[in-house]
Length: 65
Image 1 (tube, helix red, strand yellow):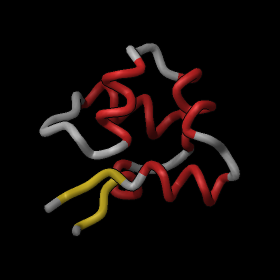
Image 2 (spheres, one colour; image 1 turned 90 degrees about the vertical axis):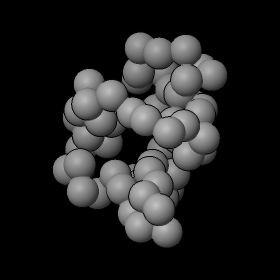
Image 3 (cartoon, rainbow, N blue to C red; image 1 turned 60 degrees about the vertical axis):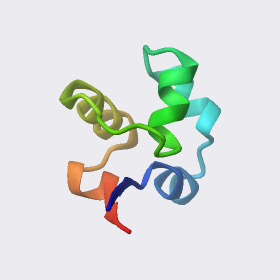
Image 4 (cartoon, rainbow, N blue to C red; image 1 turned 135 degrees about the vertical axis):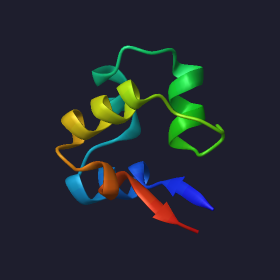
């Protein structure tokens, strides 16, 4: 199973989930579902936003569980 690695990236960068939410233009419910791996899909647009804000590559965002 593939999961997003956002929380670990935030910890490494010394940033909070709240900080990331404020950088994105989406509802908190959608944001939280994505970050907490409670969604079955994610738009390419959102992957791009996460990568730009977190200064990472798409491969960094995902991990195999």
